[in-house]
Image (cartoon, rainbow, N blue to C red; front, top):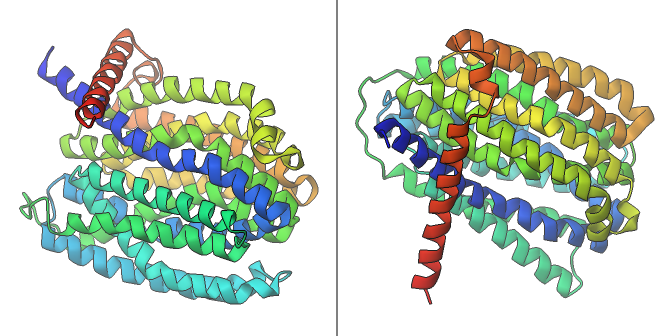
Length: 442
């Protein structure tokens, strides 16, 4: 096996280990989702979604590109450890201030029919400086390829959330507000593992870029993130005021389940972005895209077949309307996966502006169609809007990347025999390592 093949296989093994960590959260959702639905009912579950959806959107949108910029510049060794920390701290505080200010202003509109939720929502905004600060630190860890820290963060936070929700439900004291606070606090608890990234990983840099250079890259990354998050999260945020709590609950359940196949995409994205930025190698992204299509495509097909049986069993017959919503959303999941991987390929090439242009175009499509379809069609309308938009974004992203990287569509989109062999090898090695760890612990 050549040196390049060994490196590719090593990256693939890292993807698998990261995927397992990413899988912990959706697996716990398979327990907490039905638990919340059955304990709180459609209306109570809708309240949880109404409070968490804007907060989750803020934690993603108001990173303002700082984590992606830190990943890119740290991977390229263009920032020292001290510079990275200063940017993470300052950027996190600025992001939090903007997020809190804007959400405080628009909160009365979001909750105009649910005035009793205004005060708890404003209290939740106080967590944004912490969560956005940790988001920036996560960018440093990924740039240094310290994926074990991110894995521990995700695993620990998910398990804490699961334990607390089960415990509160068991003693019959679980309420919508308690469920919201458990979700937020458990996430912060897991983020504590990221602190190690601040004093490990070295501080040397080949080139020292100033804050203005990082800020320019971050601004384009932020525009791309803004556009992509509108497509991902705007549906649930707007549904707070455009439809009923029950309809929002159905859609929230369908959307969370339709995202399950993406646990691997997140791992592929992180590894591919850091590696491609470090080595300036477009073939890393092309190969990652091919494997993404194969893996996510099979999972989406399986999801469509299993949903009519599994969803009513897990969530109860009251949530049967979510079945069709989930099946429609799964159609767009593959498009979202391709868009994600190809998008970081553009960012790794320094073309964050091109990704931003594509994502902002998708945001416009999403916003217009949501206002047109959700008032009449509810969750089903939102599902069709999301899936349609992601098909368009995947096509546009693929065209932009193959032209930018001077590759063919076949190199990016068609799985090869070599990919399958490396995939099998990575699976075999990870299983062997897991068995060794298991038996060594007995």
